Amino acid sequence: MPKIEDVAERAGVSVTTVSRVLNNRGYISQKTRDKVYQVMKELNYQPNEMARALFRRKSNMIGLIIPAVSHPFFSELAYYLEYFADQKGYKLLLCNSNRDVSKEREYIDMLKKNQVDAIIMGSSVLDVQHYLHLNLPIVSFDRRVAEDIPIVTSDNLMGGRLATRLLIEKGCRKPAFVYRGIGGPHHHALLASGRTQGYEQELKEAGIEPVHFQLESTDVDYSGNENELVRFFQAHPEVDGIFASSDVIAAEVIQACRRLKKEIPAEIKIIGYDDVTIASLVSPRLSTIRQPIREMSERTIELIAKQIEGEDVPMMNTFPVTLIERGTT
Image 1 (cartoon, rainbow, N blue to C red):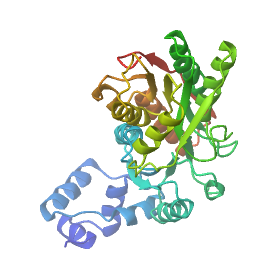
Image 2: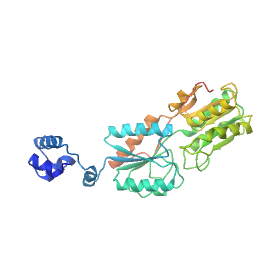
Image 3: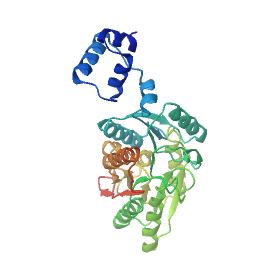
Image 4: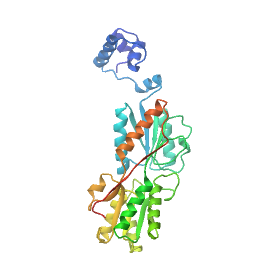
């Protein structure tokens, strides 16, 4: 494998000159640059990126910590984050935490050792002390970490209200909120809890008692959800509407209703949250609350890039949501 010394010798320049060309530091004539790049190509020389990162004190890498890339929402989020990061010359290091605090700590240590320039925090563990005092630009997705860490989120409160309002307008008198998560549906740091608040506010105004149902499974293993939902419907036959906190959960509700031969939307109406691809693939097609994932991802990368350059950024970045009505309501 060729070394930087081999490139310098064939190009007829010093090792320092080759290093300056690689790191774009100091004045180098275009003729010398072209010669160095030509020799690198001839020798198939691959620079040591870690060494370059140490030299420049910049790796052009961003760490992304999410619960599970297998979850459709986080899959789409990671796709768009990678797309916009690449446009700004950054690469992503993907870390799946599966909501495990110890695993997150290990990932943060790994990201620090790899000299990442910033971290995007998309996890939802309750203990986030390991994100404090990192001395790195951080953007948090959909949760509060600290006053000086910017947040990108959608209007969860309005999303909860729009979803619940639709169910009430369609005649539901016993709509239930079904969610999967940690810390309960009212945890102050998890901004998605705004969906619960919106649900409860609409029901209070309509004079209807709220019904909550928490699924026990994780973002990776959904195997028990359908059975849990079947038992829930059997215990609460009066429930005539479901507001699911994600499209994935809403799709599982559809499967449970099929097992119980509940007709959708005649006997029960269902609305999800996110508007990921699965919402258009299930049958009936799913009514849902659309989060602008692409736009939120673009803003996240913009906030990271500006922090890296030392610019001030807004701490709260909230995007509007949209009601999308399809066949389940």
